[in-house]
Image (cartoon, rainbow, N blue to C red; front, side, top):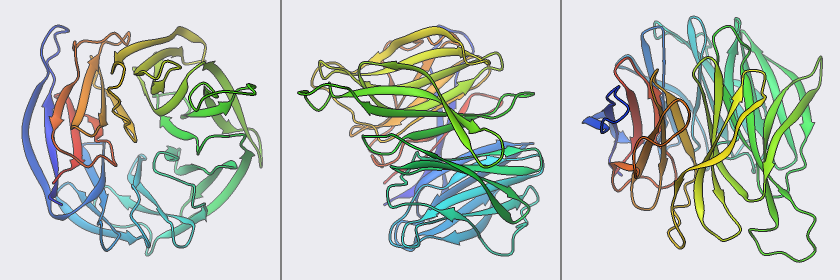
Length: 356
């Protein structure tokens, strides 16, 4: 496995311009897996998992850090940013436990040791954990095949808010958070529900369902379905330009073709534009990405994923119309088990990925 690498994508502001990738810049010389990058208050944090020791490592503004450790196998760290600190969350599969640690912007840990957030499940997978700041606290969300759980982290104390029994019938729901200045953090889910068919093939049995989950008073969570469609839902991503949400996901349709779909919602979660195709793979040309990532850079939505061929991306307008006739490759070959992280910068977006 090669070192984790970073490439700058300097995306031109003109809607007809071609995406231009900057040079690939190594972040670390050690093996790395599942990297993620977040930026806040002119600080940049990248975290990853060592593929053999399962140590959670990080780089804050060029400063290397050891955050904690997982066991049995590596999982993707999840990052969130508050007013003066970052939160790094990860799953330890051996202990079936979520852990977290807060990191101040100056590089000092606010917690002497990792904090046990709450029990997870062997079915808690990459993409089913999310975190966000709320005032001086952090909220951490995670899903299993049976429930969605949320807990509040105040200081180094984890306080459960509640659990929502989940009716998922095909794997574990994907969860994504999105922040809008002046608004509460929204938590979106993408799930597959069994259709009431007596005889069906593996695709037509499932219906993609999308919505939000949020605290509903003390000790409970509620879910609100926004819409559902007659095709199987895959990985999801969500961005906001401050006035609306754009929800994106991979879908497998009944004719076995795959596509990236987009739907736009108001901040009140009214559907502004129904689901539409922004990229289609074609019959027999499956890419089967394990995850989807996206960012709004002020002028464009940039969507990225990993396939068997390469790390790939496509640019969309603010109205979710494709700017590129076909996706462009970021790097190839890549770690097909993890999509690249996509982070907005002052000059475009930053892709972070493990490559070898």
